Image (cartoon, rainbow, N blue to C red; front, side, top):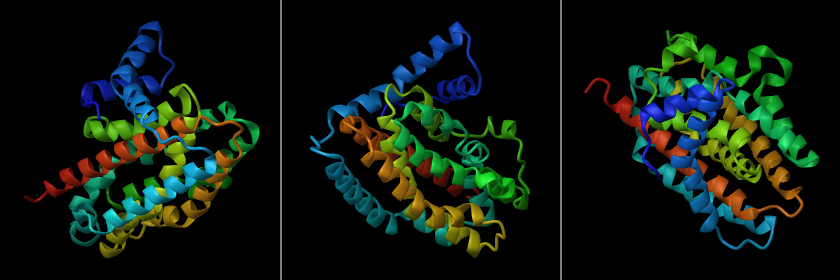
Length: 276
């Protein structure tokens, strides 16, 4: 995976949050060409020769099963779920605040890029993410509730100076997938993987929140509930595509697994530093 620099990732995050001028757009392309574009191309070029969406979804099922089995014995997952102190848990929450406070907002532009049936399947997922019209149930509000209980600010700007480059990459990846990737198949593979992997990826977070007596752990438990349905919707979004580029779908799966894994490992490593 191409080395990350904090300066480049922070610049990209800033550019994604506004309409850049010509110079900013050139900078955006340069950072993407140094970071995520080659990663996506490499996974696309090495993708298996899938004969159908069904074959790809079976491969994804096996890939997820391998990851879940590895997570069960992962030292970071055990640390977070069973050992992390409240202050250590707050570091993990802090590292994902840029994403949690804006969750799914950056994904909306992908809908008109998709064929109708596939786009509607994705849109059903995004409606849930945004609370189905109930402000109090949107995932970003659940994150605000969590931050507030932990005595942490809900001001996005406060997290710009403390977020690690790998966690900036986590946020930037979603912008790229929805708005910048050359084809929407990357997004479909990425988000199908993401909505499926959260079902085991968030278990240590939910376990930690319960163990630490955190009342507003619903951000994690809601994902463990609703993402079963979201995973099914995303699989349907892939199935309904006519003549999809399956190598790009698989590239989305693999690059997202890489970036999510790096972000989680970095957040946990920073948490371990607290109190040592």
